[in-house]
Image (tube, rainbow, N blue to C red):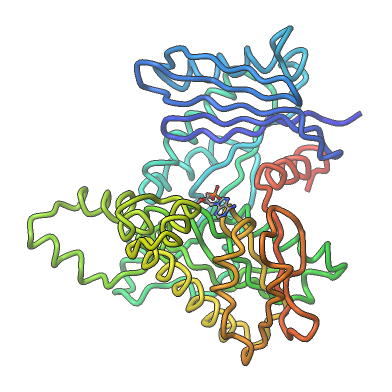
Length: 401
Ligand code: AMP
C-alpha cells in the first residue's frame, strides 16, 4: 500500500498543494489558494475530472491551510477521504543558507536555519515557515520534510561560489553564491540520466531551466559545478521580470538619482527583464507574438533573452571541458521551439547541431532534438518539482535515507 504525501508550497500570498501517492508516483490531485491577505481570495482544486473553485476571504495562511485541508478531504469534491491518510508532508523552502545542504526532516534546528536564511530570501522564507508551522499544528505527528531550492547546488567549489568582494563579508554576512531552482535541476539531471540509461556520474550536462524565473546549471558527474543564480535568484539570466546580470555600478548611479534601496530592489526584481525591455509583458508567448507582428521592443527582449542564455551556455561548456548533454526545461525550455532554435543557432562548431524539424513545435515531452551528428546531445525534459519533493520525502521518511 502506497503512502500519501502532501506537498506544500507556501508563498507570500498563495498556497499551492498537491497530493501524491508514493512510491507509485501517482498524482492524486492538487489545489491553489490565491490572494491570501486581501479582502477576497480564491481556492481552486482539481482531482481528475473533478474541479472546484470558489471565492472567500483568506485573511492569513492559517485560514488558507484550514480551507485547503477541509477541501482536500471533502466528502463530495475531495481528493482523499480523511486527512489522516496523509503520511508525510514535503515543504518547498526557498533558501537553506549554508547549513541546509540537503532535504531534511523538520526539527527545531532546521526551523532555526530557515529563519537565519530569511535575510537572503525575505519574500519566500517567512511564508515557507508559516506553512511548516501550520502543517505541524494541523497534522500533529505527521513527519514534515523541508526541501530547499538551494540544496542541490551545495557542491559548487569555493572558487565558483565566492564573490570577489572583501572576504570578511562572506563570514560576516554570509554573502556567497547559493543558486536556486535546485529541485528542478536535480529532477531533470537525474531524469536525463535515467532516459539515457547512464549513471549520472558518467555524464556532464547543462540543464537550462527557462521559465518566468530562469537559471542554468553545469552538472558534472551528477553534481552541480556552477549555476547562474547567486546569493538571491536575481543573478544570472534575464528573466520574466528580473534583470539578471547587470553592471553593479548602475545601482549607486541610480541611487544618486534618488532611487532608494527598496525601489531598486523592486525595479530589478519586478519591472525588468522581458517586461522591462518589451514594455509589454513578461510572458514569452506574448513577446513572440508581438515580435512576429513587428513590435521592435518585443523583438529586442527576445533577442536579449536568447543571447544571454547562449553566453551562459558557452561559458558552462568551457567550465565543464566536455559536455555530453544540454537539457531544456521550464515553461519556455519545454515548450518554446523558437527560443531553443535561437539559443542553439550557429553553435555547430561547438558541437551543437539542432534538428530543426524535431525542435519545431515540440512541447512538454521528453525528446532528443539534436541531429545524430551533433557531438552534444540536446534534449527537452519536462521538470516535475513536486515529484522530486515527493521522492525526497519518501526516501527520508519511509526508506530512512
Ligand atoms: P514557468 O515559469 O516555468 O511556468 O514558465 C512560464 C513561461 O513559459 C512564460 O514566459 C510562458 O510564456 C512560457 N511558455 C509556456 N508555454 C509556452 C509556449 N508554448 N511557447 C512559448 N513560451 C511558453
